[in-house]
Image (tube, rainbow, N blue to C red; front, side):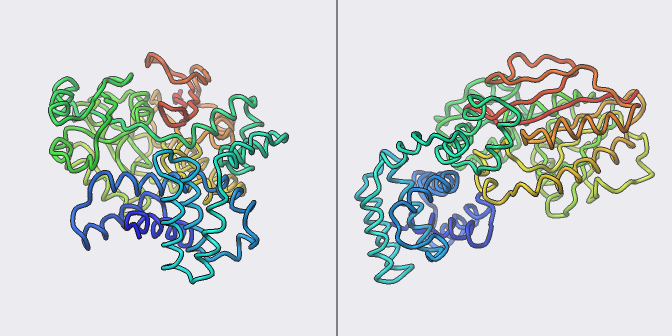
Length: 448
């Protein structure tokens, strides 16, 4: 029995049964495996990650195909056996380099260990029937919502919400992009090095590093265990998606300003603002939980930044001492995360339509409360990694209606493949996830 597939199975079980986050569950299991067996080959880690993220992302589609051949209802199948089926079907349908015989045989071997004799026969019978045409036939479904849902593994409620916002071609592109492998971007720490020097250092280690569209960002290929690189440990770069970096740049913080990041963890946007400010001025970084604030602290220490003060605070609760204290405010608020599904595919199965009402109330409270901390003439950016209007435009328009002392200087919706030429001006931006970047929403407001 293949140990790599067994590790992947344990992660999938943790995600499914205990509602663990995919990245946390995977990291935990890999650390445990290294502790028991020593350092793992990067190819093995890559294979485990491929199965975990791929199976999690394509779960709805895979379940539809399992139902086609199973004489047992999904709810009655043991969670261990169901996840063995899922990961095996994923390999058969989507991993061309894995022979079907290997996927079937290893799935049966796992079923013998994690089920019983009848379970292994059940798994064997289903897997031998699975063919790539089972997936291709889903494209023949006539109902648009059902077809998009089943061919892109997207919950029906999300497809329906997106269709209310955009045409069917755009919705299909968004849903298809949610299953793509995310690109690996890093942000150069200009306090310690520059883009050209870092590119040279990385290329000497056999890592392909290309200039990204955003200044001081690089697109990497051919790198494993990136956090073990000396350049990372020395604080020369941060792992950050290019679009996430643009949010900090969009706020345009200056070296002599006081800046608030009210929802700061894990610290990527906070530390980028400090770098843009040349480590001068003042940044207050808040988060609701102490363990998340520690992530920001670790990032600032590694990067050599000393203008960030972290505090455990609830951004929905008013603090008189900060009234009209800040020149700039960044509100990267909690959201449903529909724009980052290719990085966090388990979100699709954790989030429910009824969560929208609850999360938008939190977003509105944060926006209302933190607007009090902005000086007259100051600027505030509201952002989410979601693409639903209820979390974005509707929150902004309600706020502007209730707070006439705030204004949006210019409104601009961007639905191109990517924001070209990062123009420095006030605007309202919607970016949909695609093969290059994550999905985000940004809006800059000014206090009159």
